Image (cartoon, rainbow, N blue to C red):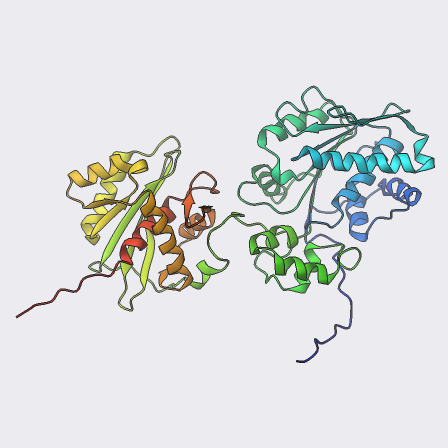
Length: 474
């Protein structure tokens, strides 16, 4: 065994975000925060100082230019310390109110306790405090100046009736509901010099509030919106150490390379990408092994008329989306799959038109059978049966088997596709329900329309059954 070559230089996390709003120039109030850091003997890290310098830039009237600020960074990199010192600055330096909210009330209370601990244990800061309440549901800090800190729940009524002239801090914005966020944002509206600080790591397709904010931040946002994303490039390898530095600005200061190595080695790939590399994924509970869709893509695959073909179709629970898929036995023994047509409507798809469309595809490819789920699409199947199409229900226990067949076929490269964008997207939307002996794709927890994967599972399951060969006996 040979020793690992030693790196000549220790890795250091990036100070500047990989993606950020155009940086501001001018006067800022960073020094106020740094003064407090000196008092409590907890200095800022370089990345925290970089972000706060831009975030606390003021105009000629002394008002904040950045009204809303979104910081995205991997776990355990010091988001809370940055927020804690900013909270203290609002309470002690600028005499303004603070409102703390998190997706989990216990997380908001943890930030509250960290702030109170600094105030209670520091002799200099203690003299500015009038009262601290720790009673359940009434947690608050009241300063002699009149400034106040409160903790609220991330619900539709948790922040109603509140007004904040200083800082609204929302942690783990990826988990905040749309109702909770919509209720919280008006709390700063009546105060032109208030700020909102949002922090999180990367989200998935369910993180609707965070995804909307990120999309707006990347589409020419106004100066009032500060965006700071410390993340690894989206398609980098998880063992790319340079990518680690982009997502972990505290690397080499409070986080070690060994800690990241251990996190990657012991965590599922989806968790590694969101929490350690701050990368976006479609679903945290995807049933497909990482990279399997790329490995089974074949750009030369074509669905030929006359081959042994099976169709499958399904619709979403909202009835707004549906898909028709096909699978064929290829000459080399593999199973080729693909989407033939997708259906969508703002209200509900027209099942009569969908049935007519499926029948027209059947007239072209002459499938041996068309698979469906009787609990979701029985009406469409009845129309097809009346028009002479052979339909077969694949639901209940059969669908558990079908999902297993699709996964086994993909993992062992016996099932291939031609990389259709819609197919990849729907496969990435999938979430799984697992019991002690089997699993299945489920619609309720999936990140979007999965009518195509459901149809593909049915199709692959039928094509994996050994096909009889015609023989002539004499």
